[in-house]
Image (cartoon, rainbow, N blue to C red; front, side, top):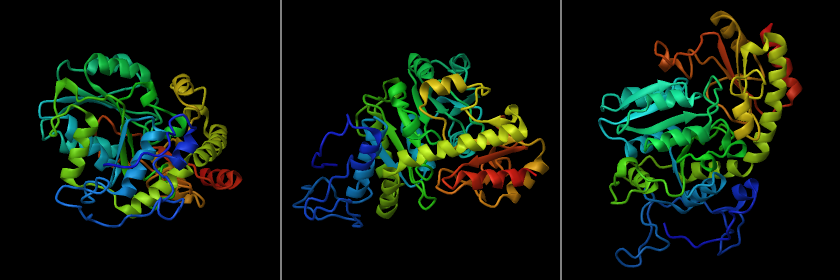
Length: 402
């Protein structure tokens, strides 16, 4: 799209970038909040002579451009693209990079929806995958198939086991094999972790979660590092090797775009991301203290704990440990009892909203991996710690634990 360049916010702090990048006051009215452009089509000043580069909203929308510029700014990427869901974003990236016969490495504790997409939709398309502990760079290197592996896919922290992977080390492994490193940064957010600065080629977000932050909008995003090229010297459908160009063509051709009202809600959420994540992290640390006291540190999964196997890496590559906590309670029956007894923590899927949520992954978010190598423990509970008064959260969990 063709837009009028605004100020260069690249040297500003993250909160400033989130609030201002791509969001200049409206030039005609001075409105400090960019308008919501609901038009599906745009008048052309002669055939092919587009005002500001827009012709049809499947190909681009000024409101969408504002969000994409803001996301690229906060993740230190060159390009960002937003989609109708996190899985739609993942699918566009996979279709842009992979072909039948290709291979990718995935985490052995991947989000169930991601694994379902890769195994059940791309498997019949003759794309193979290997699931390994991405916390072990040597295991990832051993899983790579030279000449076939196009992507190394990483979640850190992972969902729901809160595993931590060394992004810089995995970038070296992936790049040595000619593969791209893709990092799902949904749990950490750009506030706590900057994967592109650590060597990642593409960052994935379910913007439904912390970026939107209010449990009222679905969305997904990809942020692409400067200079990221398709692996294996491939050219995309537009004749270039840029990952961003190939993905944008997929977005246009397949149409999984985000509507302007959803873009607006996501952009509004992004503005307050830094202060919200700080509070999520503070509350989660207090919740973790209670859970350790009640269950023992060995049963609490949180990167902020010194007992966590990924604590040292997390402390090095993150500026905080986030608002997600998982814990084991000894049996499936007790896990179900706990999630059914909370009152402040709502029993619901999703995460990252202002309200606290609790869920039973084995039968909810990760039911699709039951019976596979990625099956999660049946006594596991996952909590998304919200922004309520922390004393109320502690009392609620204490009561639910019995």
